[in-house]
Image (cartoon, rainbow, N blue to C red; front, top):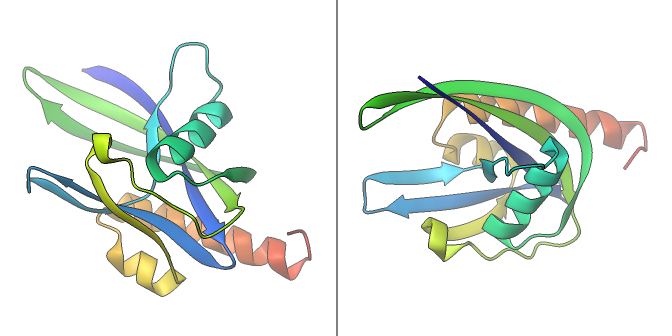
Length: 144
């Protein structure tokens, strides 16, 4: 078994959540949150910010850590056990441009209920719910 760590963000601007649509050979397709692999010598926060910027083109800042998700998937001759560290982030605009090299064909900001229903994976839906509740709490307490 291979252990792997990624970091990502629930990126919000004016109450809307940034999602990416991936289409890889019509095999792996669906709406996801931006995330990616930790590079050598990188802190988790650095990875999350870099991956958001690379995959979406959006400039964001971290508001707080919201938790992690875990899942496994098969590759030829092995199984990958992946842990993803998630951060609540605030974008500085509605700008986004999907990273074509990673097979992202669309991106955009969606209202919470739209984003929740669009997301492909249940573990990302759970992180979205937790992050959005944190966002609402920060907003209610005038901390945004």
